[in-house]
Length: 181
Image (tube, rainbow, N blue to C red; front, side, top):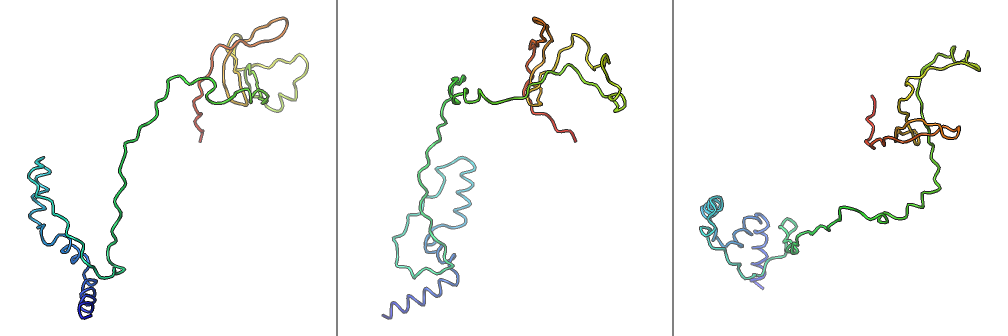
């Protein structure tokens, strides 16, 4: 009983300066600052043999109930395994992204733009049969093909069986447009 009271009194003393007491208990005074500095210098010089021998762990002693300010022991870290990334083929098969036929019935707004011009309202009101509107492109210049108001290709105008047609000559790269400030 007297030993238990003495232990509780020792525990109260330990809670006043727990890190220093725990350090002294864990190392039992075996590690000195000179040893630590020598080990660090040896590691920097690349001499692993010059390090002091490791301190052997002391057997577990009965410790007082842990105080709220006492440091908690963390469980050991799980073993680390290297990450192996999956290998991808350079060419992805056509069916890898699903069935594209699901998009067959999606309506798109496709426009062929021969050219543009700016006019005053007064000039637009004067337009009538036989009026000529001058565009910013010359005959033979490529026309723009827009899908949902986005330029996707350029081509040339042809006449086939009395119908206008467009032969696609160039597909425009899909670089995101810069926002104008």
